[in-house]
Length: 354
Ligand code: BGC
Image (cartoon, rainbow, N blue to C red):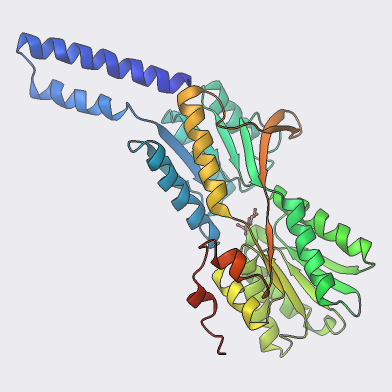
């Protein structure tokens, strides 16, 4: 059992016993009664969840599902969500605050994979297990890294473009920021498929802070150099949305093939309408549920919920677990995104008339 949780349980038990004693003696005061209330409130699991930001559609779903699953596992569980709004220093301060609050488990979606090893050490020194959620925290002694197979995400994007046809064999990559470890993994997967198929990567742009408007500015600035570019690999669907908007303004939409990831609703609509070749669907419900199960197991038993594999994150061998991403095109939209309940049929096909 996790040390903090155990201590809380013991304290609560001592309090209950002393209160029973006091009640028996018939002199319980209002003040004592409320202090009993305060301490019994501590007798539940508390999870600190530090999130990069809610700028991107998917994270709301990640945290909603996580909270729902934790409540299902333990209805009295308390989840303290901290949103750093994309600011690295804010995230560090929020994690320190959660450590001070003595949460039972910390879950982190890191903004910068390289900037949290010291705060993770602080958490571990305070006896708090840490889960690195979706993005790897490098050089940190995390108890679990749980994510999707990000290299596969890049391979699926690349393969979809090859399948759709790249006559000039030229593509551009508008990735996410280099601080996000997922970005280099997705890129590695994408580049491997381009290499196998003799496709030239004309340029790679790393969108700062995943701010899609920056990717749109890149497109505006390079609009005259896109003539023989077949496709643009967008780091996610939010970037794809802004890129397609900018291309439309230059009457280039449809001429350049676009792929993204996250299965955002707008992207799924574009896929069935034919203005985006594919998106990668990552079942974030499964990820969030698995994270909640592991957080619960770490808090109550001090161990992970299920068996995992080991990997090195630079300085430490840590446990990891990868879920599989799924390529979504107009052909399999129904069996993937819709059948899983990720989006409703009517919303995806909103603009499609038979
Ligand atoms: C995730 C993507 C997400 C992006 C921006 C990446 O680390 O893998 O799913 O769109 O961050 O939040």
